[in-house]
Image (cartoon, rainbow, N blue to C red; front, side, top):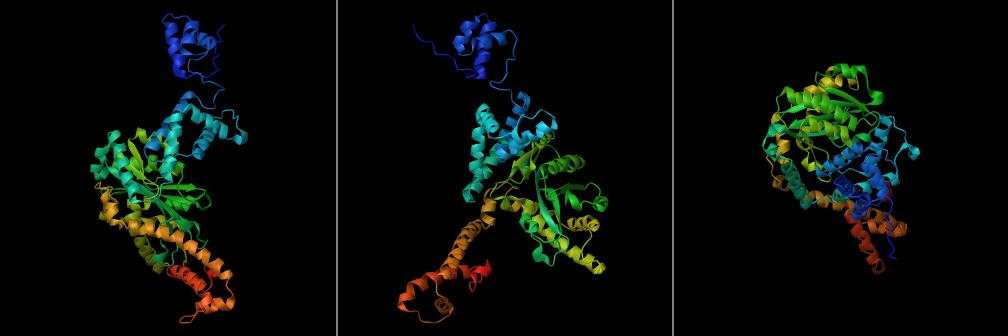
Length: 468
């Protein structure tokens, strides 16, 4: 008797079960349909009689409903298409927040889904697995002309596939948003840098406020959002803010997904309506998904806001606000602050209640052409991928990145090498126009080459340990 291979429990695609049910409804016996489509006979029988749901998942019930998981899958797919690298951490955090929000019984250890749930999620949705892997590769791609050119090509194709490429020709519908830190008490203009890493390292005597802004290629600026740390939030800051401005707070004092949603809902969309900006609009933003969530994506879809991620490793070349507006803002801010200090010499630091009114003055002095220029030099409007390649010192930056890594290697090598050179011999090496004994010539040449590289970057080689 021929041995019949048993059908593995739950080892069938949903499509096969649906096809089997269709045959049963057309009059085919359950046993015949089960054998034809390789699905469990009893399961097919129960589903055909309505005893179990047709689309019930195989295995134990998932913490998410089918609709909830479908929405998550759709969101991940759309974010990847727009260039945002959704990570495993974000997905797990989202599920944890959703379960808490719905007050649903939580079966996870530590109140958070883990490796097992994530792997099963990817197995149920293999298309997402490939998407995540593809974006991981993109996020690790180095900074190059090729990657920048590919971003322009992919972005245009993405907009074209969504029927929105024509927006690239309409400056009032092209927006960029970004955040920057403003020092309340800068010593001089040289302290006014854009990058948040600087502000996060400042001491308590160098307080700063975060300003989140948006502007379009036509030269218009959207009312900003001022972001405070939780403990720094005061009623004075709120009351002093101009009308239509927004005040937010976060643990870090920087933008979060919740605040980004709040900015779009309470500031950006009302401003679009008030200024009769035709929809849809394109909003270029930071390539990291830190500011995004499903709720924000849903809101943007409902309000015809097309989010596009700037290239992860070239955002500083593609951020119009960063390339022009923030520089002008910092210059204006420094000027306004100096004027304020002359009138308030008894007050060493600008009170937070005076921050928003003074910032408004600095923003009002920004020429709309400066805003438009930011889009021009980044190649976003007019849309021209060659512009940033020509105007931005890309080769110089690449060389600087390589030199930075090389410099660190040389610096560390110099520290180690000098540990093994006798003090009197090292002192001799550091003198100029001295003769080196033949036995030490090779050692001296190695030491000299490393020292020249380090000194070329302006670092102190008299004591490398202190220079670090």
